[in-house]
View: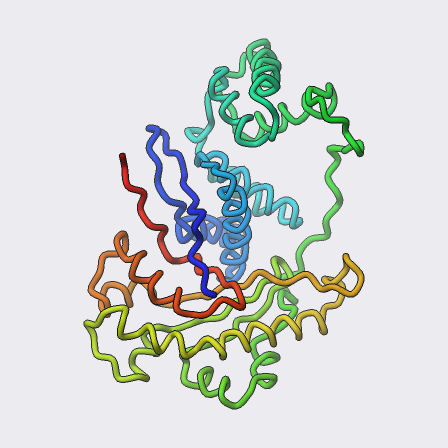
Length: 339
């Protein structure tokens, strides 16, 4: 099915209010850093933003919220682990010092409680140790990442958790080879299309569907679905409601599933190194539906405001059946009702 995440990611602002995670804003920030490092490929910032968003959604499923500094911390972690140190450094410089957090005991406690699965008593003990160190060296404000790493040091090496450590962990980072920008694709669009059935290729040739390349950086399946071209192909004249276009989206389900399955099959065939792990079992790739000109579709075809369109878009995509799960990162989360 097309999945509009139930675990919406919310960011805690400086004034204590919450706002939904802005995928496009993060992508633009990463793209600016890439441009400053001489990288102008638009797919690159999109891949990084998708990877970060996926991690955030996994954590949000546990009921967590994130501050802006924590979001920056996760972005830099993803970049550094991918061997993109120059871009990570550029992102670090771009992050304002205003995004640093206070090192008072309550802030430290809140941050540790969101990042460590330990009891409240252990959280208090760990927070006091970190706070004591920062107080001694007179650090009044710092990055969330530094707080988390300091807490992890005490947690692992002084064994604050009663659970025995099964395997000693080291903090030395593995050496990662620089990413090869000259050869970014595992699988290109032109490798996928000839493998599709004639009926599916008709949707591709019309511009309604388009399989996107699979990158080496963060391998995932991405399929473009152009709702404007879909409405034009089926004679829909704006304005119209989501109920009119939904059956046409529903009819695309077999073609979307076919593109996803073909892309994954070709990926594992052409890049078997990614299939290491459980013998005889390939790890499935995360799949995304990309929606070009979606805001234009919402404003000009549905005559709706972006902040209030989530319910209508959910209606459109929930009609696609349940066999395969896709994420639609551009769709805004449903607003929470303030009690």
